[in-house]
Length: 226
Image 1 (cartoon, rainbow, N blue to C red):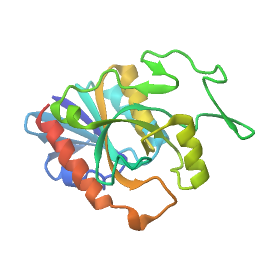
Image 2 (cartoon, one colour; image 1 turned 30 degrees about the horizontal axis):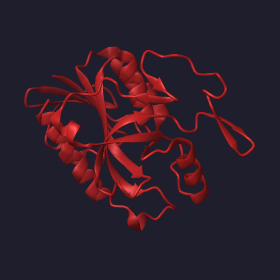
Image 3 (spheres, one colour; image 1 turned 45 degrees about the horizontal axis):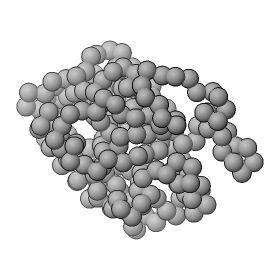
Image 4 (cartoon, rainbow, N blue to C red; image 1 turned 45 degrees about the vertical axis):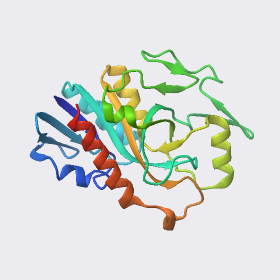
């Protein structure tokens, strides 16, 4: 199987890559590996939606993949999802895409600026309608996410975004990944491990090593059952 594995940074998937056999460097962002009967292209575009959109578009234009996985870390808005938990993001949206009107926020839908796309769009959310069929993915908690350019760390802004979108987790790349894969019709999944609660920045409360360990372990299980 030809698999595209996308992660914003190397550190998030370093333990996983040690399980693969390196084949070659395609370009400065894309490396090719083999694992069992799979050919795995690993794309590390960098942090944020802009980097992800460019490098993912370039990659998908150059090769056909059977499936794509976006794996990485996330922040949790809810006490139901704890640090170290691995989740399956089934819908995502760009929470900042819109306009301010005084203290109110206007989405693209509010401004009649959003167009119908070739995938289900539900109140501005991109729903993963072509999720990979996989027992490990099916066992994970399904959650709703937002993608942001600035991660939340202020009580007022956290309350506002929760009232607007009711997200369970946030990342900085997920919506770009879904947008590209859904339009290209590639079966995909966005799998994330929670490294921190979304709150005023308290790095002492973060556990990146645990999140990375659980993320890589779960991702390997997914690949083993593809």
